[in-house]
Length: 307
Image 1 (tube, rainbow, N blue to C red):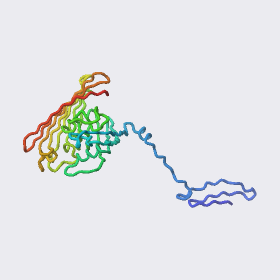
Image 2 (image 1 turned 180 degrees about the horizontal axis):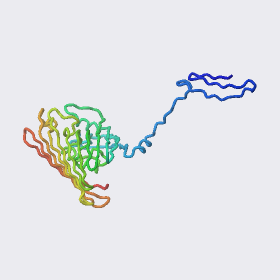
Image 3 (image 1 turned 180 degrees about the vertical axis):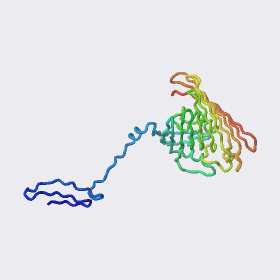
Image 4 (image 1 turned 90 degrees about the vertical axis):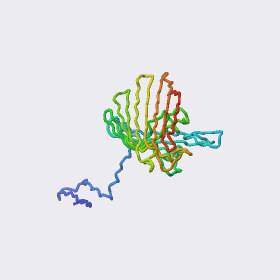
């Protein structure tokens, strides 16, 4: 009699006395943790994940440049603030899944000198040297003509954007620097009754701030209407209204511990001359309540684009 023993059981094979013994094949049970080879799971590649999830995308860009000014301290600038310097302005990555129906979200992070400026604009009463910023991070839900967003996102106002790849010029105008907000933290809803009209409304913590400043606990309202009445013309009208801390005003207008109502209306129109050439016009009108009276500012910009 031949026998093979294993930890998980006993297997045997018997033969008659008058018959010569013959070889028998007996299965050997696996011994967990000892004889069994470790299981391997293939890690899917990034391309496989993207292919298996339609609508999921990862994008990015790097923006760098050189600036020189004939003044020691450049003024009235947003991001190009160095007098004579090469700069890594932005290295950005965006992970997004924004289906036309159902839940989704977006995360947009940037690093570089622009990120430091943006991060400091989000803070109240403190500063940082960090060159990293979560520019956008929001959840979204779409159903029919309605889309809802909650989190942190860029402003609706202006012809120019924080993302340099969508701008006409390498630098930003005074309208972008002084007359419109850059980003908001709050909620936003968009209603698109047709392909040529879109309505947007939202409520947020104000101009740029991630959390409400102590002096301006009230929320800021945002409203926008945009449309394309014809192939050659499109328009966008955006308005923001809410409390703005006067600590953030330019000296000598700074007033500590006080907030005043700030309103801005942004008009944007685009005329498409040819398939390659368009003209973008942008007008901003701003008013700010202060103990010194109402401050007013306005500006206009005209930008050709070949995109």
